[in-house]
Image (cartoon, rainbow, N blue to C red):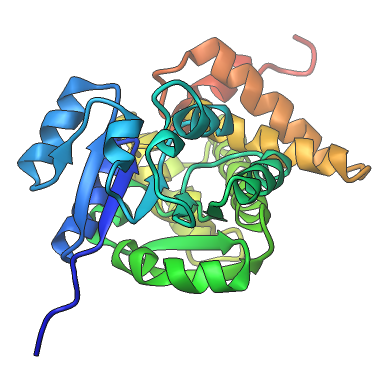
Length: 300
């Protein structure tokens, strides 16, 4: 029996998340043409068995589909439509899967523009971090036309084990931003609780143990407090600036919908300030350092 032809994917953005995701596609038998501004990332995709390309346009030449994993919607747009962008060489009716975290309203506009040019777009951001990108167990939230999400699913299933169809264009990006707001709020709640408890005289590790078998349990108490915060290793692999961006996207969506969401607005402001103070290289768990430095007594 003849084997089906190997499907070729242009993978644009080979950073901490993108590179292991591209490796999962290679391991599943896809041909991957990779592009990243980093020469080290291009060398890494070659070592993994992919083809390193000098531009997004070069990566998309001869590809069946394009996957983007980039820092922002603006970067995605430039990689697709800018100079040497993927659409300069991508065949008509090809599927573009944006796995970045982008503003959902911008995604809707990009979807409409790409459709007008003869291309299809699915927004499919991920949750799970670097570890789950490496082992292929990401959660993926896919928005777009139902048929396009179905077409994307075989590729998504090589990178994730929980694939959700979230609705129309932009819905995946909306869900990702809202998920990260909930995660960010839970992180701050856990860290502020430990700061208060330690000031009273409680032991931080004992507090975390109790939270993890009580109703205060959340992702931060389970997978971050002892591992990265109390140990002060700050090595979760997800940047504080990216968390601040995602919470800001969620707050922007709320404003666009004319909703008043005070906790979301407060979280967006707090994470934005922490990102400004700690800088672009900080891990998101380092917001504990920001909270500690800004905690003061009421009189002082």
